[in-house]
Amino acid sequence: MQKKKLMIHDFMSMKRDGEKITWITSYDYPTAQFAEAAGMDMILVGDSLGMCVYGYESTVPVTMDQCIVHSEAVRRAAPNTFVVGDMPLGSYQVSDAEAARNAIRFLKEAGVDAIKLEGGKRVLSRIRAILDAGIVVIGHIGLTPQSSGQIGGHKAQGRTVDSARLVIEDALAIEEAGAQMLLIEAVPPEVAGFITKRLRIPVLSIGAGPGCDGQLLIVSDLIGQFTAFTPKFVKQYANVAEVVTNALKAYVSDVRNGTFPTDEHCYHMMKGEEEKLKEVIREYK
Ligand code: KIV
Image 1 (cartoon, rainbow, N blue to C red):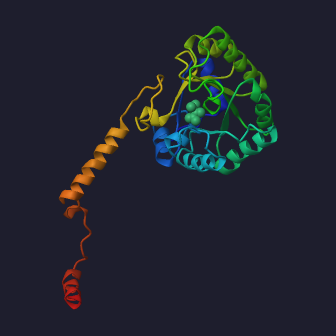
Image 2 (tube, rainbow, N blue to C red):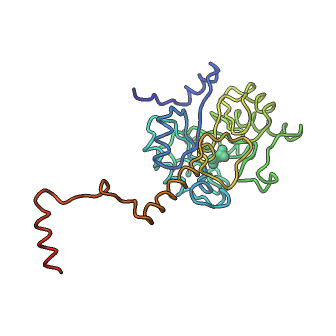
Image 3 (cartoon, helix red, strand yellow):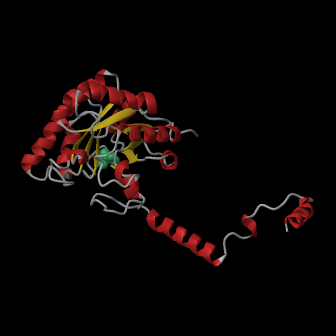
């Protein structure tokens, strides 16, 4: 049976019914196909693709064009999953008009269902501008990797009362601005759990504990493909790096010692052609 594609009102109902929302990042066609087949509710084409796909040190160099190309591929692979485009650094910081223009690109060129952007109170006018264009907006607060320089690096937020208050105020302001969903990253469960109860919109967690309405993980962490570092909040479900490296080592060894390819990997001449080929070969000798 074909999977039913969930939309934003379904996520609101899931929150009301206490049903958890499942969310994963994906950047390419095959992985997005696997996510849809696994019954994932949402896919984020995160700007984490900068590190997970391109090998950059951070998300900073990621461009709109890169996000569009990867979102398009994911959309094609997962037509029945709610796909979210991630606004990269530089696509929404300069003005409301530019934020709306780039969010519109995500819909027109990649067919995503929503966009996500980082920041709390300081991006409220951007959120409103994108909503005014009729686009579903997901906020992202707590640890916001694009502004990690300002928040002291890739560090958990809200761990002191003063910092927790800032996270809570950002959450309230984002809901008030009209965003339809909120993602909280690397914040203590006590704080994120309170926000989840206090807000009407679904609140998703990446490293914000079990009290939220659902969970997001970066697929490359979950399957053990990204090996540079692993945040504390990650649960690794597979070791793709090991599986793939072992497969490639076995191939290198087979080629070197002549055990690949064998007869079963060869195309043979069509019936009756073998004899004629012998003649051709004689001609060239
Ligand atoms: O780009 C991304 O994958 C993200 C997550 C870190 C939440 O924004």
